[in-house]
Image (cartoon, rainbow, N blue to C red; front, side):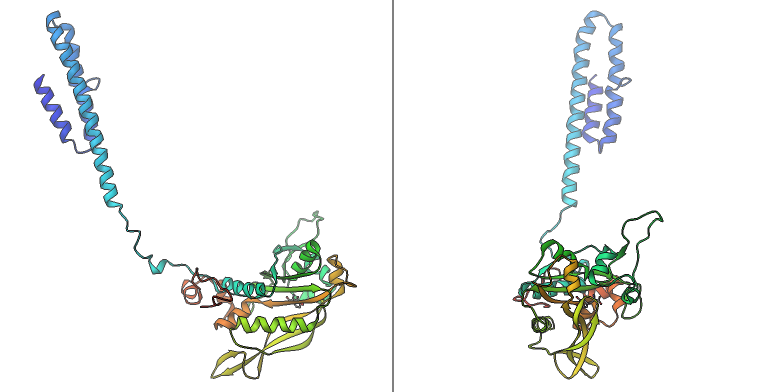
Length: 357
Ligand code: DAH
């Protein structure tokens, strides 16, 4: 019995892993293990022999069981120590530069535009990208037969033949947010509405999805002069120049009367575009005094209230400011392009901290 003891206690102490330990357990104290077999022999012994052999076998069984448990625990401790050693990590190391994400120029420019208009008291409003044709067209004084509907290359949502809900479109401009905002909040108001818009068009300067920012200011005595001041303030701040001239050209939009397209001052020197100097002009937005029909559609009394609105392409002003030649690149998700034109995530544009460090 001493042999048995020495054999197992030594083997258990030397067991290298849990599988070996389990094999030893089966061999020693399993149902058909050596100790169990010896216990079966007890029946054949004389009562005297049994009296010493019985307790001795039980004690050996207990001893082997606790040796197994102790070794098992030691192995688990060692495994944990090994894991802790292997998985050690220096959290003070700098992050790997190639894993840094960046802010897309469209997000950056949207933040810049928002910061500048917020400083002039404009809140941000939003509307759905799938809207009814009433909000996208009718309420904006573009009735069903109006050529502007065809010009805009509208995406219509598919509908079942028996579906009699109003037709839905992917909004072709951010102007429907004017209606939704005035419907909910009435006048006076001062908002911008940046967001995605959609038209079936694709070439170097057109993509089926692009970004606009709408502006709307309604009060008792707002005029085109306020519009001009607000836009010149905006462009000087946005292009980070001291001052900038704008040129208003008479135009036509169904939702404004009078309407103007606005150009900003620029120069081309050695193929380099400079904004805010020289005697060239670049068209950047459409604008005007909100049409009385539009105010009425939104539940605002045109006898009491008036104001200006404008709509500007965010992608376009982003291309001008950051020298991006092809609009389609904005939506290609090319990592090299994103690294080149992207912005650091923690540099939030503010007027006091700088818009585009
Ligand atoms: N919605 C027009 C477009 O997408 C842009 C526009 C022009 C918006 C004049 C306005 C505006 O608010 O007054 O082409």
